[in-house]
Image (cartoon, rainbow, N blue to C red; front, side):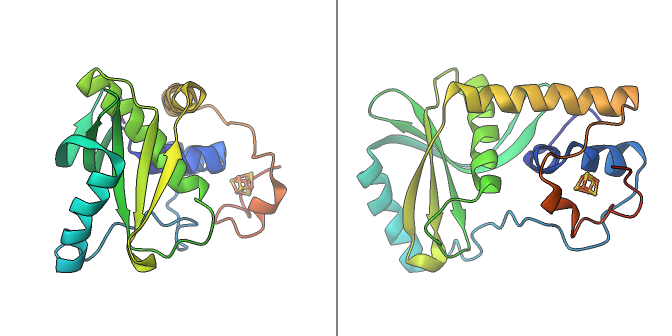
Length: 191
Ligand code: SF4
């Protein structure tokens, strides 16, 4: 596998053994995925369209590129919007067909970190934050801080995933034993 998606990274960060079972042994996950990276479903909704302009003003957007399919050597992903901000930095913006429950899920954050890596490499500008719009919470806009350490985590994960796949490495189990309770692979995974 030469090209990874944010989902591969998210799975790996949940438990590195997912990567092994799914991509080295090719055992698919039969159960519903533990996370949902849901996209904005009704992006043609008029109210949302009007809101998009309002939100961009609020953020201080200088220029925008919509539906950007970005790649680098090992990662690919489609970003709803890539924004150039007043301060010269760039930011991904993603619409979620979801309700905001007072916290941003790790999976959403990790997806933003992946986009940050892709944007920096493709546009040659720094990315220090991303934005999520929760459609089912009246298009609530949430800013996600993106630090160097977050982008480094993505780059490190990519090289570890590739190493697992290319060298058939059986990785360490997740530290969080609770995650094993509902895991698809719990019956074949030696802890
Ligand atoms: S059972 Fe636990 S350690 Fe094994 S793959 Fe599932 S989450 Fe990871």
